[in-house]
Length: 230
Image (cartoon, rainbow, N blue to C red):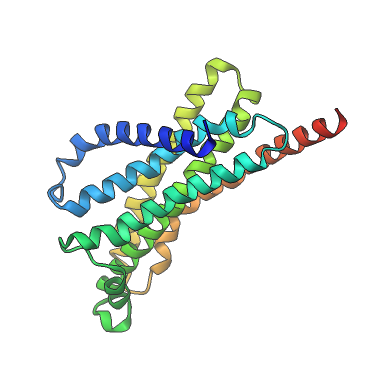
């Protein structure tokens, strides 16, 4: 089975499972009746599912010393999921017509003509977190791929699955903590332009992705050297 197909199938299965877990808790929310709420929930589930989906295809991507075609197919598939997440939050939700602001409306609210600093900060937060949720979905997929590439070579089999779960839950909990803390302490209480605040939500995934890139790249180079000398 092709890499992209395996990735998308794993993504769909994990997203469905995550939605089953999230839906009962989401129904307790005051905004659970809004259609855009469920659209964003689906986008969130897809973003979270990108991590285990990346792990699921890592062995297939790195099954040979120079897996450039497989890696390219994976990146295209992960990028397509990011685009789906982006379109679901910035295009599809506003088209439903349940009060969700579209991109032009958000840009207007961010401008000096948009009104108070609370309105400007809220619009910037909504717009940039929607865009960065797509970026984070891509980062989650790459983190899963990187972890799935080196973990079988560096960790004993009984340890791998707990490590996968620890990293996944760490991404989930830290993402929620950064999101909630940034919004409550900066966006709501800073009487100035805080458009930058949304970028805090991608600091941890980006740092983990770059950190795991080092051992993955070293593994890459070792495999290439072995193929040249053999």
